Length: 375
Ligand code: PMP
Ligand code: GLN
Image (cartoon, rainbow, N blue to C red; front, side):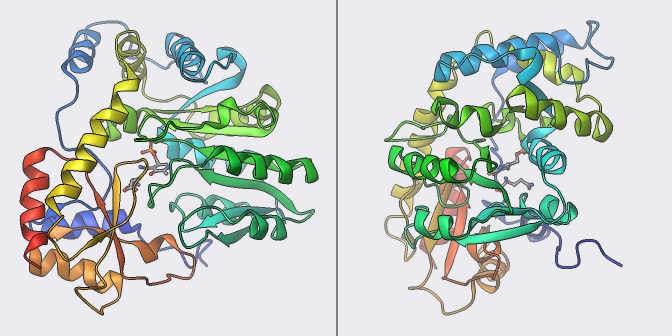
């Protein structure tokens, strides 16, 4: 008897595996392919000879927790207590899972916007709670009226993802005002704010839940160094929550992993003393612009991208096939891997849209674009 009968292998695993099998250029799963900052690898090399190889304290390596508090202060002017409000996790994935497991009970309802990243629904189901999928508008902005109509006395949490994977949309001041209105009517509703791409926004600055006074006491904020420092394989992220919620989250964390990788935490804490996260937006904006320019003469129609390192594209002018079939053929017949957008929807709605990851070196983007322009 399966506890998750409808859950299959993640599309990111499926597409990356297929890309490798067919030796295709992998623009599917989101990870950078350029070298990590040498300052970070030098710190890591030096640390291998130091005494950082045993368990860290359960909630995180103290110097890293202080650095995270400093980062939140410098980015958002929010003061948080490293001892009581921060948890270092094995990537954002573990932060999301641990938070939901700790705070959501049998029978609760959790609002998940559709389309959505794939990590949210399973932990809700494992809690015997009910995911309530609420469709975004056609331009991928939240439909607050629909969200409010989906709230009830059973609503425990709403999950927002800003900047948004896969659409690259970012939330605006007006969105937060609407969210705050709903929260004022549902005093027990919590917000899980997945902001793993917080430093990857372009024309407009990222508006973080950290800056919203009305949210602070009810919001769990999730981030990941994987995205910010091009180290997705290190799997180090962090969760910020008010003490009364963090106490519960830590209870689960201590039995799920107890503590996470010590040397990575030590390296990141030292790197945070020298790195400037504010350069990341410009770096990826240039990548986005270059990728868009390379695809200018293709038959793909590129959608707006305000943040993240993902570009959504319509292939409606190329094929009538559904997006999963199209992505498979893109690998086998054209040598490029992408992600079908239907897999982010609860009802697998096919709109002839696919997602490319542009966190790649210029040579990879150029090679992929050459193939894509020939379709
Ligand atoms: N949330 C979103 C929106 C993501 O795109 C990802 C993965 N890239 C994660 C969470 C998971 O992050 P991590 O790899 O740090 O677990
Ligand atoms: N977040 C990455 C993406 O959207 C995938 C991470 C994973 O494979 N779990 O591509």
